[in-house]
Image (cartoon, rainbow, N blue to C red; front, side):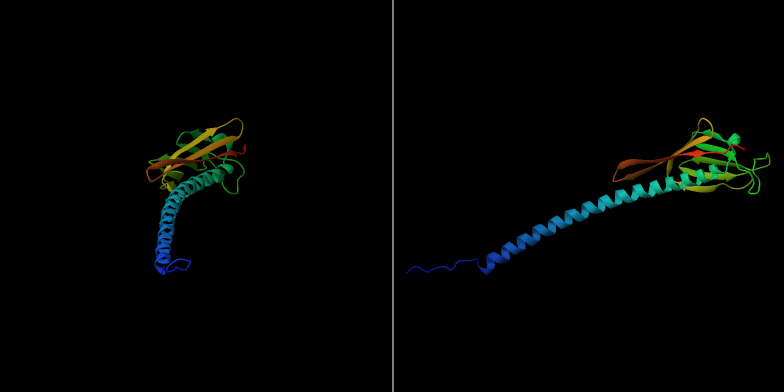
Length: 165
């Protein structure tokens, strides 16, 4: 007599299918985790360089808002101007000169002479200023980040209105 096999799966078949499914799901999770870690590392490097460039731009813009227009000297890699004393409304010859200089990826701010320059930002690739028509000064700051061998440039720029003394 022929034995009748009941419909359904045996326990061994269920264990094999379950372990196969878990292995596949584990592999997919591993690949997604590794990929998201790479994306996070690239994004973090870009945001860090962009934040440094933005801080440098903000500091230069704040100083330029108080500068006297006739004293502004723009150049690639630098910016020089004078600010009136806090209680004064116009620039005097005795007011200290403020100089921003980019050297070796480090942006420094020098106030007057005889005082060591303050480091504003590191890791920058460019600091350019452009004296425009009238009272506008353009400032551009660039930083470069490199993640997993892929370089990426981040640039921020601003136009600042400089008052006429």
